[in-house]
Image 1: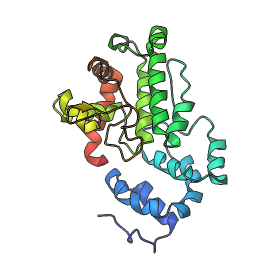
Image 2 (image 1 turned 45 degrees about the vertical axis):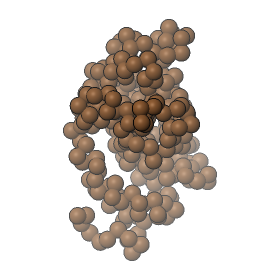
Image 3 (image 1 turned 90 degrees about the vertical axis):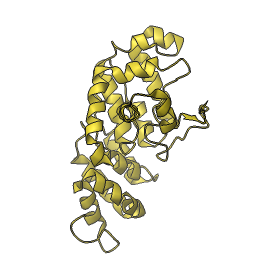
Image 4 (image 1 turned 30 degrees about the horizontal axis):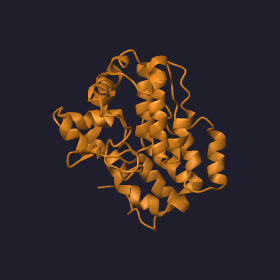
Length: 249
């Protein structure tokens, strides 16, 4: 149970936002519908609150605040973009990657564009041969910068309310006992034995199943995704998501 007065119209927008920011992850999820309903009142408060949050972590709450801020085309949204031209979340890189286009797409909930940006970044990380052929070999994954794989995962987690990202896919694979054939339907990548058709049959929104994005082409088998999820940098994050899953739901 949440302490304090009921989170209803009798509570001010500032009080509701404070309760949201100070609540546990499970409680935060229970408050989302009320915050969505009062988004117009909340939006003027969000920029100042974002300044006090941790831009080096992977909490999904700031991403939700940013989505509400950018839900209108007005001076509030323009102010946010002016303050954070490269995006709010810090994006360390060991390979000189520019994450601004990806973060901008995720901030605007342009998830199909964000998925294409992610594929492009993975090719850059894998090297010139991968860029030239247009896809990554599983053997090119182990040398990829762990810092960058973690940054990609953090971006997806932050801007999906903790529902998308490599670490989420890894946690779901563990829940399936490591059985890939059980994972695909959970991700929404396969239905009744047929692969979901790209791109129109995928769900490019927060309504998608957990782990639905980013996409990894499985037509050549599971070795690329297995290599990604087995990368030490992502293994560490898969473990973190699995351990925190009870609190996230």
